[in-house]
Length: 291
Length: 166
Image (cartoon, rainbow over all chains, first blue to last red; front, side):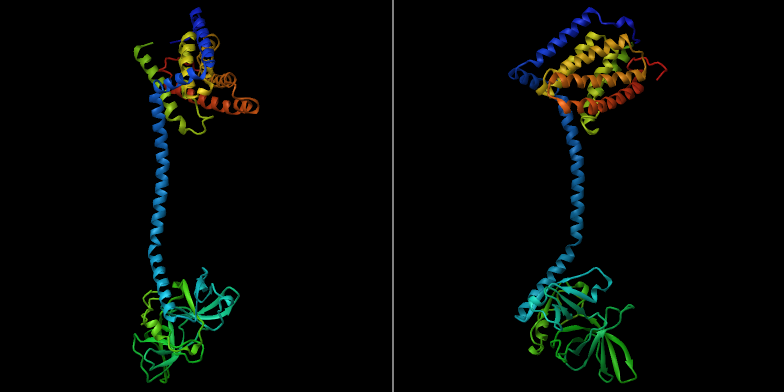
């Protein structure tokens, strides 16, 4: 349909326009008691299907947004679930630590390990106990599974622990039955056996079978006697027919430790073997076969 | 105008009304999103005489006023004015041209907002300036773009003859 000059406003058009304007002005001047019911009536009749459509559209839009939120929550839950075994493991370690504390009954200081995400983080680490808590240098640091290391220096609130993996670590050790004595040291800093220990200085004629549990001997007066160090897993080498060196799998791995106990009692307090025998090793800290 | 064209014309207007209550809420800021209801009115006025256009504007405005009772009647007055003036001016001045129709949509939207703002008396000072100089032009632009798209896509079914000069 083409438009043309024949569609100028006629008198009827003008009258319709004036009527609509007057009605509009009348609507504007309506009192609230008439205006509101009128508006409500329009909303409930003419506009009802359109408002329902708008409501459904908004609902759909909100549902899409909620769906994204639900998906995000589900992903968060799935992520949290991946940490569940780790939490269970930590719970078990803490329970083990509590059991060890009860068995020790006194002479220890609990501390948290403040790991640093660095390559050398397993050689030394910081603990959350220092001079104020009574920590002194050259005291043994243990977990329920066994020996972790030794305190090397102490600040007011923190301490530095040298773990058994540190190249300078040495400990006087013995077989669980006391038949063999030697010095335990880290096996090395590279290669596939980097996280193993060595039992050095064992007389050639003294054979140590695999699976033998190695404990601290208490000789030297630094470490108490009877703390599990690890388990013999093989022979590392022989020296000209007069001594053997054995590989020892550690009782506890430093990276797996989150809480430790610093033994503050005198080294001569006695044999701690019974303390670790009755509860240690079950926490699975280093995968060792502690008694 | 054939019977089928008339049918299609009202279907397209109906689709615009549906878009107003479904799609518009998802097109961004409410002050900027195209006004499909007003667009349907303006497209109607392109074909209708001024009297029915004014009546249609009054009805559309009244329905909108039901959604904003605070300024009841202002929308009816504004849409009545827009409907009548659009239809009248289209007959008197404007050629059938896509660009001209786009300008009509732009001007109609802006004038509607001006009339509502003044008639309702709710906007004053800086707020009125912002509305008329920033938000209204933006909404007019989006409405004009939507209208041009509708005419370009469905102009044949709307029985609106467009010249080659677009």
